Length: 357
Image 1 (cartoon, rainbow, N blue to C red):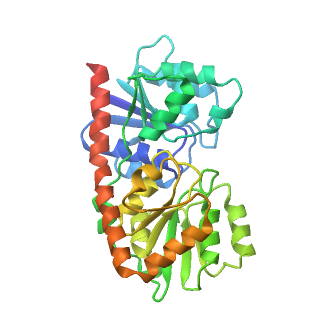
Image 2 (image 1 turned 90 degrees about the vertical axis):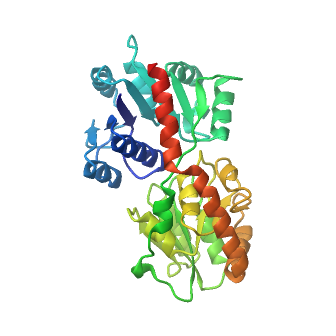
Image 3 (image 1 turned 45 degrees about the vertical axis):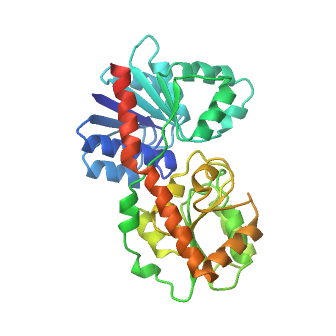
């Protein structure tokens, strides 16, 4: 079986990580698998793929993800693969267009419960046509599947299924803390997420401002909202208590170095950072929103969306009650084991094989 993964870029993000991890896992199992990235750049994920001898095909060296010429490049490629699997908007649309009058088996993954184009006036017929070109649409959570079916007007469609995201749980659990991030007498919260509209680092920053000096925050990631977050940190006089660690390749070590992992978001699909945080053996705290609620409820701790005071109280409880801290951490790790990456890969392979029968 020869498989092509297609994604808009290999920048840092949940969809990008799933595409990378899936490609690596398929490669390690002996499948012939390549990955197309519309936008180039020597990113962490690309370096990881190349270090494992995976073939990465860059369509452009700049951020050029809606270049219509890519459709013709894809059309030349598609016929040489048994399965083409897309991630993200332009990749989904361009591959569907490139496969017109072709019969290559197409799979796409819907990585979120929401996206901007669902609010675009008059765009729904295009989306209905596009998804109709795919043999299988995989949603990363049941709520993502429900939202997509509601948007498309499908009451039931066996072409739309759920495969939960997965991570290498043992890798995250067994990594060691970083010496340079040692923090005696401090209580550190960490959030790993891009600085973009779906994420709500603001509420976490505000929560830290409500707590005593020993509570500090590490934000891992980067993105278009960086200057807004820097302004908020400055306005709350938190420059000495909030560290921006940038884009990192040592996420498991950073999680092990912190005391609690937080994901504050406006919405999610099924957050990889959610599962990674739980895999680290630390308590996981999350906004009570779609995509976080489903994984966290009953294991980690949920707080009301955008409620900085509630979040601050949770952090204080975890800091002050060691038995509570230990129980939440153990519950979170138990939950993470239900989302191991091998289960995810097995389910994708089953989808691919069923389409070729």
